[in-house]
Image 1 (cartoon, rainbow, N blue to C red):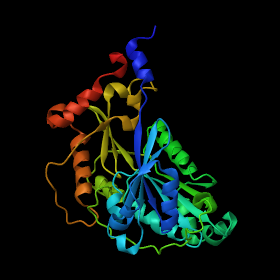
Image 2: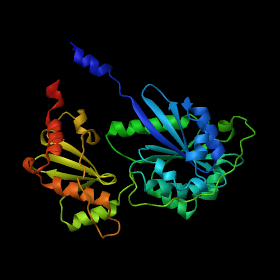
Image 3: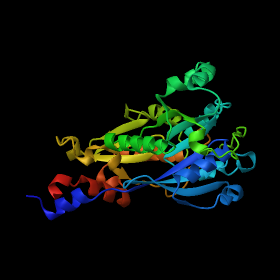
Image 4: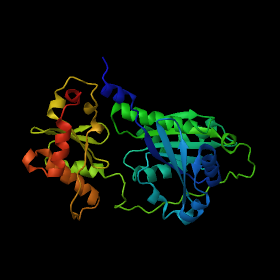
Length: 345
């Protein structure tokens, strides 16, 4: 017999709003792409005045994508990275004559966003896919990048296919309960985007590097430096996949820390011993606990800034903590996660 509460849970469907950045120096092609894929949006005049234009891309009943078309011109370089906070995917349009800009945009994005899906979309006008691969991807710089990450290569003919790729990669992370980066290289014929509009120029701006700030809101933390000091402090931890560490707290359970942004997650002792492997509590990223700093710290070590200090503080307090030693706000969150979902049913 199915109860009404079970019916309501099964009929409930999660709905996600995702922020996606659109970068690259082919400004007119980016604008045309945004015009084709978007249902609603602001006037493109915004891009000339504030450096970004925002539109809504309805994908399906689960996702709405919000496309932030960011100007990559020299006069807007000082505001470009201000719009990165909260982005979960980036589409970078690359000219077939400036494929080396992939390396520049990769470096820019990867240090500023802790977890990201990047789709490099190379716009083909006169060259073939093989021309691009022969000219660029066999060089030492590209080989180094391609060996660092697993890249997926595709030739696509529908401008909306990029959103299908993005949603598929989002679902993969949710299904696996992980926070993974994803990297895709697409080849797209120019005419599939401009739709025979002859007034659109296939020109590409030079790449202009924005200033890097150690205090950027959503930047990727210095994980190598953090691990180095954890070892020096002799804090016991286990390293798992992709910059995750686990603290085994004998009193409370297991704390997982994602070093790229310092987020903390908790798995209670009773869940660690549970054999119900389909339970959502068994998936690491469903057990987030919020830990905030009440005051700023200070460091004279290059590479260790406020965000890194906060992560070290979290690890120190969670490593061997007992209930009575934790702040009430953290303890309340832990108690809420200790109750068994199955028993509630």
